[in-house]
Structures are given as structure tokens and as C-alpha cells.
Amino acid sequence: MPLMTWTKDEYGTSVDVCDQQHQELFNRLNTLNDAVSDGERGAIASRLDNLIDYVVEHFQTEERMMEEKSFNGLAEHREEHENLVSTCADLQKKFHANEAEIEAETMAYLKNWLNHHIPVTDRSYGPALSG
Ligand code: FE2
Ligand code: FE2
Image (cartoon, rainbow, N blue to C red; front, top):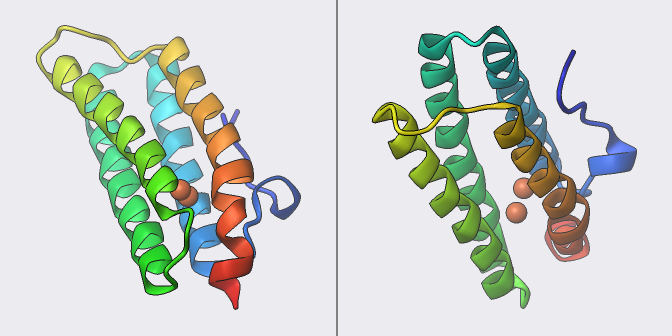
């Protein structure tokens, strides 16, 4: 069962490229979640890297678009991104060093973060970026 399912009502931002990237983000998160459910460390490792690569790429896309429109919420938005990237980088390093595991609680943390960030923080750039 997927951890997260994208719907326009819940997650739509009115910016097509961001909506598409959020769907890809959910796909990668769900794929990682399947590996976590199976408890297969090798699969978790590659899917974790795959997800984090895309998180970084997606955040860069959003920040570039906000810069181009001189969106005044950029600084706060970037700070939320940086906090997650730093948490993910730490987790990734510890996981690969066999000092931490990716578990259901980790997945719940990511889900909660996205459930706040996309409908609240991302959606707030909709009017500025979709025009
Ligand atoms: Fe964002
Ligand atoms: Fe986003």
C-alpha cells in the first residue's frame, strides 16, 4: 500500500512542474517504503539515495523559480528545505555507516514533513509562480 497518494485537492500548487515533481517524489517515497516494509537493506540503501537525490533536485527547482519571480517568501521556504536536507544527509550517512536504520518511524517523519510542507509552504507560492 502506498505511503502517500498525490491528489490535486490535497497537494495541488497550481504550478505544473512542481505538481509533477511532487508526484515523482511520492513515487520514490513509496518505493522506499516498500523496501522498508520488506526489511531488505540493499534495496533500502539504493532507494534512499534515489529519493534524497530527487529531494535535492526538486528543492533547487522550487528555489530557482522563486528567485526568478523575486518571491518574498523565499528565505523562509529555503530554510525549511535546508532543515530537511540536513536531516536527510545525516540519516543517509548514518545508514550507510550501519549506525542507523530506516524504519516505519522514519517514513512517518518524512510523510508528516511533506504533509505540512506541500499544502502549506509550497502552496503559498502558487499565485506568484503560476502567473
Ligand atoms: Fe518546497
Ligand atoms: Fe515541493
